[in-house]
Amino acid sequence: MGAAASMFSQSFFHGTRADLQPGDMIVVGHPSNFTDTQPLSWVYFAGTLDAAVWGAELALGSECERIYVVEPTGAFVDDPNLTDKKFPGNPTLSYRSRDPLRVVGEVMKWQGHPPERLQQMKEGLAVLKAKGADIIID
Image (cartoon, rainbow, N blue to C red; front, side):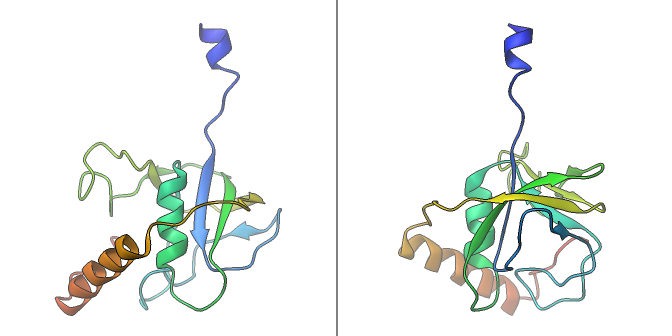
């Protein structure tokens, strides 16, 4: 069983509105996709497509929503903004790294969340912002 299982590798995804190409590097020092805060010292990514879909759908801006398959180039850790804060045990497989993410490809066909669910999420984020609780642990 061990040999067969080793044939599979974890895929990682990054949801955004940025227009990137295979080989491009996603690096620290850019503002968050979700808030108008200072540039971040981490890059964020997920091991589930659903988490990346949220990233693309909630990213600020008017550009096209995109999901990229990415490859971490260095060490990474669980994203404390989600892990054990909102989703105990990290079921979203959300991570962050100080090292760049290499864009491997783009997920061309993916399904977004139902409009009413997306609206609920945006309203929830607006409430957090109004309370000053939309803080990213960076």
